[in-house]
Image (cartoon, rainbow, N blue to C red; front, side, top):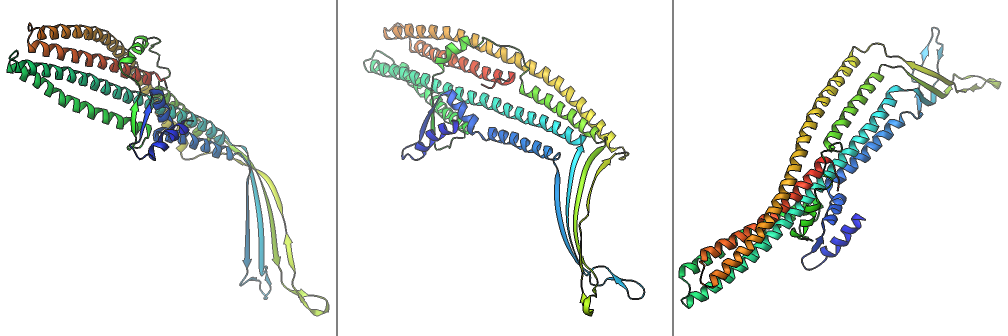
Length: 435
């Protein structure tokens, strides 16, 4: 379904003569990333690889059957004293061998190890998805922030342009000084570099999002939504927040690494146990013997065939291997101790990260409330200043200051919303939330 979505979006765009373009919501962007991002696809292939590894281990418990054949020609045969030779001039041999493990502790332990390896690969794929979702959200919100900032700056530019036009008209009629006109024009010019920088930020943010979504660079993308419209999401976003880190992917990965070492230790110890196997062999051999005198005095060659069949069991008991197995077990136990210490320290670090993320969430939320009030105050202050200036009771400096304060308040309000949403994406990553 996800690949179908990508096809429907991209195929018409790629064959269009005009500039290709596609619009995406946040949910669609996440779905597309989870479907097409190479990191996710590599992780899924790794899970599939360990499935094949497990099947290989399981195959060691199945019967093993082999066949071989040979031909032998005697150039010089063995001779006894007196010129008597023995042996065949030509020998044909066919052999089939069958073996079946009856008791193989190492194979059993290897299969348990494969199960843990598979679980580790699944967790690695889950970690890749969690990280990718967080990065896609941040990139998406970054585009919304840049676009919202551009809207505010363009509105500010239009407001300042109106002030410049009105001041220029007043200057021509002798109602405003040249200083007022120059001040208004300078303020208008100062906005242009910021607008250009914001436009560049939008292009770079879109390139980053396209990289996460594996969308070709020639395809233009547009994101749906406005950052200010996510205010209600911020208000309800603190519901259900917790410091539980049991689903953290890093901790779960360390737990699985420890389990892998435990499985490896059991596999190493299994090498000290005896193994029992059954075997069978069938041989079909043909020899042409020395000619002998037949009826009528003719030489006759005789070809003899034999077909022995053998079956049996084989017991293998390891007795001494130069202390290699014992030292191998000690090495693995040492690694288990290391991973336990790493896990304890990592849990402490992640607990701090969760607390920091929660503080960032609450701080950004309070900043949004404060900036929301500041925006209303700045708008009212600008309205009063604009009225005073047009009535001749205020100065251009007051008007410029009020206009700058209004623009900055609006930008700060959008920034506070972005900070909350970005912190929430990071919080979800830390606690192990996939969507």
